[in-house]
Length: 254
Image (cartoon, rainbow, N blue to C red; front, side, top):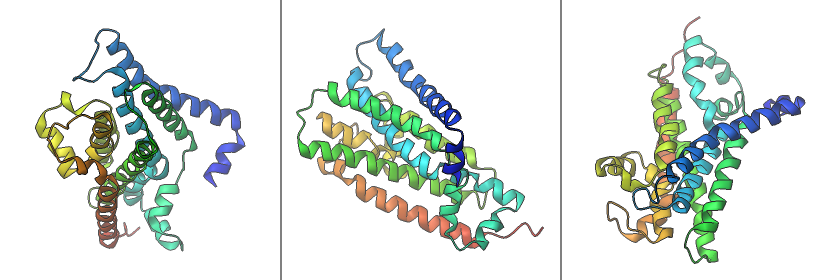
């Protein structure tokens, strides 16, 4: 329904999508400006940064497109409109994700994919079919991990209705963090996004493996292949948290 409503005004949709594309491109333009004065950042050249940036933005864009609107749960809990979702014979999470579905977010995905493609074409990697499939797996697993964070953030709002910004610090903030190499951050932060909120599996660990670089924590090489497993575990944990939040929900009574 939301897609059909959006496409009724095609010019408006194209302008909004282009605006979304350009607004997100400003992040990479900032990186380009930075590299106009330096040759490397944390030991990484511009093509390598582009690989990290493109993978992070593509993964986040997919998750944001499919689940980004779930963070409106807190507002629905406050105004009592969440009860409407419970009355429909459709999974509540699917309704929350589809609510005001914003097709214009394709602009972010397109921008991230273009930067990723440019980075792939410029990095010094001997590409094979296996490495190409590994790169695709990195993006898909990364989007699933970001999706789990969106679901967990939405579930947390059952207990703390004003917590959407807390979720944003891990989703939007996590995407910004992953655009830069882990070597520029403190080791404690790298440990946190590896073992607590496993955002490092979105692009840091698999991309470092592709580039033939050691990660700052000196983890075994096979860890880079754990993205799908980490995605499955985080989605399972987020799903359990969502169910717990749904069971704890009490209507406003109005």
